[in-house]
Figure 1 (cartoon, helix red, strand yellow):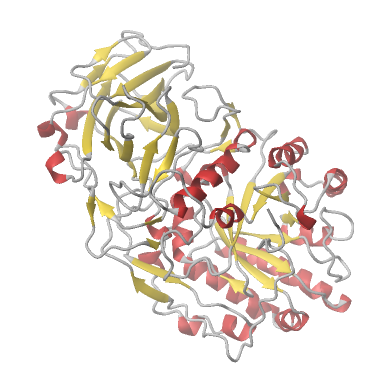
Figure 2 (figure 1 turned 60 degrees about the horizontal axis):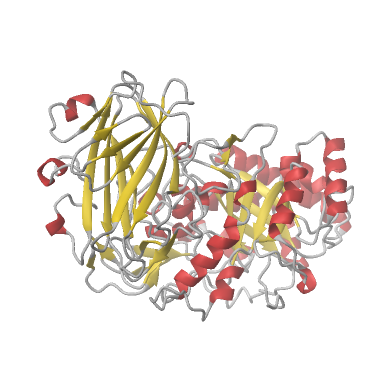
Amino acid sequence: MTSAKRPYPSQDRDSSVDEATAPAFKMALRSVSERKKCNDFDTNNLTPLPAIYLETDPVCGNHQLLSFEARSRNFNKEQHVIALDYDVRGKGVFLGKHSDLLTKYKFPVTSDNRREVLVCHDMVNQNDCSKKYSDDYRFVHWAVIDYFCYFGPNYVNVPPPGWINAAHRHGVPIFGTFIARHSELMEEALSKVDVIVDALVNLCKNFGFEGWLINVGCIVQPKRVEKLLCFLRQLRVAIKREIPHGRIFWYDSVTNNGEFSLQNELNKRNITFHRCTGSTLIHYDWNDASLETTAATLQRERTTMVSAFFSFDINGQLPMGRIRNPAELMELIEDGCFSTAIVAPNWSFQLSQGGDNGNGSGCESAAFLKHNDHCWWRLWEYLGTRPYCKMPFYTNFCVGSGRVSYQHGFKLLNSRGSSNLNVQSLQPSVPLSGNAEYCFKEVFAGGNSLRITNYDHAFRLFLTEFCLPQGVMVLGYAYKAPDGATLDVIMRFCASRGHDRDLYLFCGNYTQHTIAGGRCNIAPLSVARARKFEHSEIPGVESAVANGWRTRYFLVQFDGSMILKEIGVKCCRTMPDKADTILGAIYLQSFDLLVTKGVEGKANVKAYKDQLWTHTDA
């Protein structure tokens, strides 16, 4: 494994382009109709997005940056961008080493143990819309990160709407990058601070992202350092004033006297920049002494340790080809109560190029996702997982790419291999490693499904905090299973009063409901009853789906308000060599009591009256 060409957010990549010959900064964007697409959903999971791919042209100089406004009038943010909604997810919890187990074992994230996670994507030519489905990088572990930075090679890197939508759909703020690698370019920007700040804020407002990572990778004349500090202060104030949830980050690069010198820590030579921005991404060549120096510096500043983001590669790679266990790095950062910046996570994608995914589909996307999932699994015990909090809830597990596109199991007309993060659906809350894998060959909706690989025990897919004020909920799912196989979607509920009381519902192909203490087996609704509650993307009538896919719907009514805490899967098969079971989509929605009154086939679960709770794990 070599690290010679790793695209870290470092200073060794010269992306200078003659501004006179560079492409125009067309914020009307390149727009390519990709296909007749299946519905994708906003944060309320109901509104389709346009079936187009959008990206910005490179911004290589200040002239292009300042000419933005006149060239952007054809872009409609309301039409193409989902607004950030923090209420999509709740407060984080630490799941420990067994994040995939369906259990109430978890520790809340508090002010004493709170740390933040920034993912700094960095991939050249990421968004070439002509790419095949396997030639892209996607991010899916949104549940454990607080910020996502779209890092590119140009002077100003604006996140494409696809990345903005994928982040916002999961309740994550997203940031662009301002990278000055040449002193002349930086000097020009500092000579017109007011208009540069206005232009950067304008980009955030027009495209709907939350701020900037500022990376000055060049020498700044000592007499101009104060002007740089003024630029940072002014930008921070303007972003916070104009942009909901707005903020800026500073990349550890320049010292207080303007010298370009990576410090790998916060110290007296670079603390001035931290004062101006409030958040610093620290270069990844740090060591134990760097942590101690940073802690002492922030203590003198009377500033929280969380404001320092120590960076490392998800694969543990360091400069000069050195390797270190990422879990060890994470533990060191955790012990110091610092935040984390995971840089260039796409490196695992580049390692997977040309690899075999092992599932027979011939798709490098699956190989990358499998390797990447394992990398994140090693770190999960140190990360706070955020539960989903909003219903209706729908996911088809699409990662934003595929060989072709499907709807209801049907291949869509003229669909082709592509990558478009606009169609990324809500992703599992925990790594799939060892339990399931993304499948691009047999698909119900979007570009992929989930292939079950664990047939031994139940496992968690989603951490949730869904409140059912009237205790009524509908579950629907699409699946494909061989003869003799069983599939249950498991839901763990707790009482809205007293969260130590639990009840597990197993929703599978049962002939009748079995209501018992701790565990209830729930039978599906008949087709006629399911039609009343079906989601448009999961038809209740199986004749409306194709290629062996089936659907099930379940209606549950409790005798009081409940909270759905997590969703998992239990799958069994009689013969190990039988075909795999595949999960295509899941839908959940709460309903009013009047809507379900008199509906035959619903499960009446009197959890409070009959005290059906369990105090043990499933």
